[in-house]
Length: 227
Image (tube, rainbow, N blue to C red; front, side):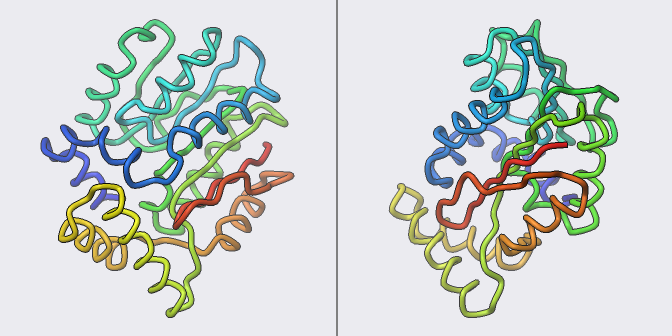
């Protein structure tokens, strides 16, 4: 997570951040829409929602646009990304509080729902466990939690195949070939990606119930579970 923080504190990376997820994550806007729909199944109209990895503000804006009665606490360790989020969600600023730091700086809650989108693939296993535990502790009993991030088979041959497919998708989406290849090398060398069955087991081990996958696209997977 610390290496990711260095990247997301770089002015150039922050300036171009909003171009990345829609181009590199298949169905990114649909993922945000699905997450909001799943949260709304149980969250009340005046829900208080915790968003971990809120820097940039993309999901905060998507959720706030769709749910005018919800309020949000967003957490992110990058000051620069939180500044970008402030600009992104300016029209909803009265309903959003941002907190600089890791998961422990989140208010105690209790929250009616929580999300962590495109963040946990930066976290080593011990950090993921801690983040999931802290999120669950801050949720109302039975409240929904949606997580989505990189998650693909970790067998050597399958891992290489999915990394190649992800690189090809990036190029097909308009990324320069050399940039796409560099991204692949960074993912392979740096990111502590887990297999989908490991990710799902982790959610259950940290106390989330009725866990099920709702999103699968390329190297990305998404789950919903309940506190």
